[in-house]
Image 1 (cartoon, rainbow, N blue to C red):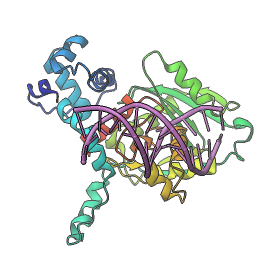
Image 2 (cartoon, rainbow, N blue to C red):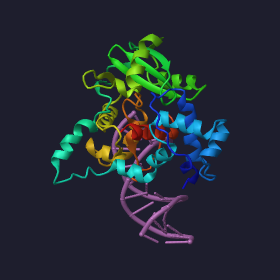
Image 3 (cartoon, chains in turn orange, green, yellow):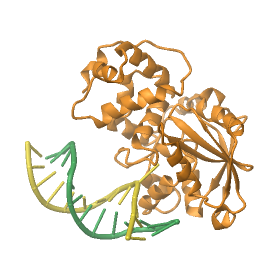
Length: 294
DNA sequence: CGCCATTAGTGGG
DNA sequence: CCCACTAATGGCG
């Protein structure tokens, strides 16, 4: 497929992922997945970005935990189908599965949640006080929004688009009071984006603000383990509306707590990445990033 | 067969 | 009316 990616052997790098790397990575992902006509190789991409191939390789690997080549494999249709995979129960070896349930969920961002129904945030969030701040994340700049009941919003922005992301979020609860409070949101940012900080002892408090249907869908997303995925129709069945897969898609698209409520783990039944509110490129990045940590 | 593109049916907001 | 869906269908290697 992309022969040039094989020319440079891996160099395992053990550094924590740095937010700035995402800009580089985003360009790479875009080039290899969207410029499919030319199929640029690592050397070409590095040149376009003004980097050396080895430098690019290092940056990419530091970010993803995966070489570009391996990353590419992790976001193919075949691999996506495997993520959807039918819980093939190894009938003979239950102990294996039990042993796996620990390490298998090692990398979950544990979340406790409560719902805030439209009745509660009536008239667009009249009495809702939301503090917000922008922070670096492995997926570009993120906008975090918190209430006294917990994390209410996570959005993403490409460079220069912060304003758009902010307006997107405030439009959801137009009458809420918004207070910039970066120090307050910074603690959340660290917790959310660094897997080292994930622990079941200290779950992250999230408040889901939406309709009953939406909240049901989002809760269902929270049950998908790290590094796995489900189809929209599976989720529809799970909440007892087997024919509502399209409505499920719409509800997932309205998920205000991106990444934390893992909307990137919802795929089309065929394994296709269909869509993502903050850009399919970012969805690819999240799935590939998870593949590198899983 | 497999891989598109098109169509019709779909349910929530 | 809009939509981050999907199963069915028909065309084309």
